[in-house]
Length: 418
Ligand code: HAM
Image 1 (cartoon, protein in one colour):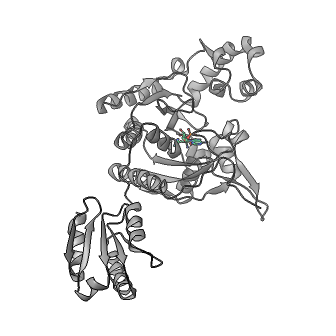
Image 2 (image 1 turned 180 degrees about the horizontal axis):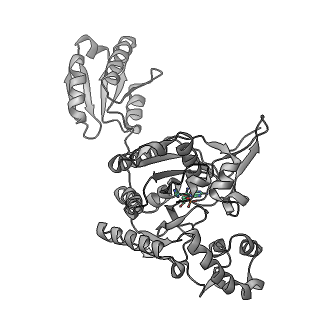
């Protein structure tokens, strides 16, 4: 009998995991600069949270959730996204009572039952941020800026930013009428999903993946913005201009989740195929109260980390990840083994990445391992060296050797590692 990983999941093996670690550390570092602090919420939440939070008529809730009844007969769902859980935690822990803004980030797995393909998985990982407590459009612009800096500092090329305003529930009501008037005569051309969305949530229709060709000339939400929304959107743009962040206004951008108000945005990467959205987010002013909290506003994003890795790979961008040992001990004889164990222990304690041979192999085989692991030095210790209280330190890059005393090894290596 043999087992395989579930469809749409990935094993992250040594060799690749270092890239993940690097990206995660990088996300933490960017958050530190913008004063976003980490929050860790459960991987599963009550199903109702996502139904209410993400929206009943979204693809995510209608078709993609991993939902099951637990042994206590509760319906629970593996989180398909991070925002609903963070908002739940924000409300439950009364973080809104704090006088300052609450600026949070998270990195972790999300689950959606989607058709897997390159860049689309059933378990995937997001780096997300959520900022609560201000209507100021500067906060929307800050969220965008954080995402842009995250990509930029990793060296990603060809990342574009699309923005839109989806207005307020009031402006959307006026838009709804205009959109339905446009869609009615095309009813016979549209897919079943679109027809159902026309009844339940017409704005979602424009998000359809198969019917785009029928939407040319559709009224734009932007033309129906109320004054407040239009002013907010103009301010967001002016701040982005100030920061020199390039963007394009995409009046069709509606996002796949229902909680957005005002700003909506997506980051796209060139050259990774049709699934090119590497991140997205926006403002969600009604969500906190929808989930049982006070009237409170928020704005944030979620960036797909698998997609970031894909872009890095496609663009041949090397990350400075280093799992190489500084030194590899090559030993001959029982006594040398004993000394090497002690020296290795001390070096590791002092912070040096060091390795030795296991299994008493021939010297040639040991040196080969040192090469394979890309050690910088081999520390050669045989019976003769032991007798003379010496150790041979060989640079594996140049072949140069020097003889030092074991007592000085640590000092030498630490100096060389700088
Ligand atoms: P989202 O657009 O559904 O937004 O997802 C954000 C990002 O997660 C996408 O742009 C994509 O990079 C990645 N992603 C989504 N689904 C998959 C998948 N099946 N496989 C691989 N990557 C995927 C949200 O989730 C919102 N919670 C973002 C947000 C936070 N808005 C406000 N705050």
